[in-house]
Image 1 (cartoon, rainbow, N blue to C red):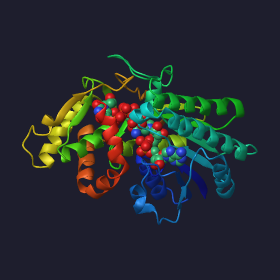
Image 2 (image 1 turned 180 degrees about the horizontal axis):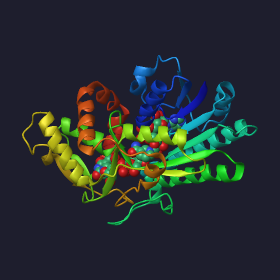
Image 3 (image 1 turned 90 degrees about the vertical axis):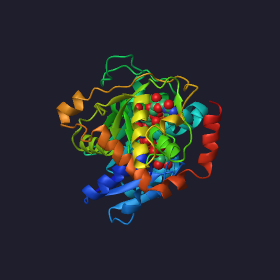
Image 4 (image 1 turned 180 degrees about the vertical axis):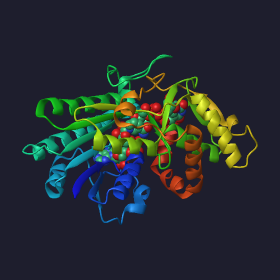
Amino acid sequence: MKNILITGGAGFIGSHLVRLFVQKYPNYHIYNLDLLTYAGNLENIKDIEQAENYTFLNGDIADKKYIQNIFKTYKFDAVIHLAAESHVDRSITNPIEFVMTNVIGTVNLLQTANQNWKDNKTAKLFYHVSTDEVYGSLKETGKFTETTAYDPHSPYSASKASSDHFVRAYHDTYGMPVVISNCSNNYGPNQFPEKLIPLFINNIQQEKNLPVYGNGKNVRDWLYVEDHAAAIDLIFHQGKIGETYNIGGNNELTNIELIHTLCKLLDKKLGRKEGSSKKLITYVKDRSGHDLRYAIDIKKIHKELGWQPTLNFKEGLEKTVDWYLNNKEWLKNVTSGAYQDYYKKQYKQR
Ligand code: NAD
Ligand code: DAU
């Protein structure tokens, strides 16, 4: 039996990863550590909460005593670290929170793991889940590779870049067995409706404006969340210690292309006249420091580990839209209370 700590498992990507590991690996005990911030929701993993090989731990990755305690009690063999503040817009209004969780929290986990594993690092692993945003912004051509220089522009990407550097520093300085992956934009069920796709699905349903930042021509590369979880599974088991792997969907779209596709799909699903959702599009003030384009070169993970995305965007988007339409209660619960204040502040200034 291996004891594996997954952090951030009540969030979007973490919940899909926890489910995959709990169901696929009965010989692993999965400890899901999550602070349950606004982005964490135990509803996301309700279906596996009774599993024998699963334990939920409610705590803060930046809390030194707490992290030392759980390492001592559960004797983790590996960590898969996803807990983070993850929304760029929130990082612009509240950068310190991002430093506390993404930088201090990560270093706290590294330090505790290093202290606990120092006498025997064999078969241990610290897997850090990161983002393509650390590489900055591309012009019209080219792709991010694992050797692209870091050039973050938002407080969020700067905090993730910093945490990546600390992970590598622990490897180089203390011999900590680490692996890092940098992934592009995920989409799918359970994503908090502050991110583009779920926000717009929610707004279309409610016939609210669709706030497009700038001219809508920024490009993102979209990957279905379960494909990301499958890549993490593969890297966790077969990735080389000390290495970085880029993960992406080979699926670049301008925001406005994506939004038009989403509008058309929802018109159909909601039985509305074609073109009605498009009328909700409103161009608003651009995001400060808005990266123009992200694109990921996935040659390394494909060649070395045989991974590639399995779902095309059309299928993935339809699955995602169907999930939100069938889970109105989930959407209603997460958009009540604090969400209303966030929404007013975030979009009033635009
Ligand atoms: P999310 O915001 O949906 O979930 C983050 C989770 O972390 C939440 O459950 C939250 O409660 C928890 N958390 C936050 N602060 C914590 C703390 N101090 N202690 C313990 N738990 C805490 O994020 P996500 O979109 O699922 O992203 C997960 C990870 O993947 C992040 O590290 C993010 O940088 C990375 N990533 C995300 C994407 C994407 O498109 N969403 C792409 C690439 C990489
Ligand atoms: O690239 C990986 C990153 O993708 C992850 O590391 C982040 O955690 C994740 O949030 C995501 O970052 P983005 O900033 O790309 O995602 P977001 O959904 O916020 O925005 C996608 C694009 O849509 C971006 O160009 C900004 C634009 N946008 C977003 C919102 C919320 C709008 O035009 N209007 C909006 O209201």
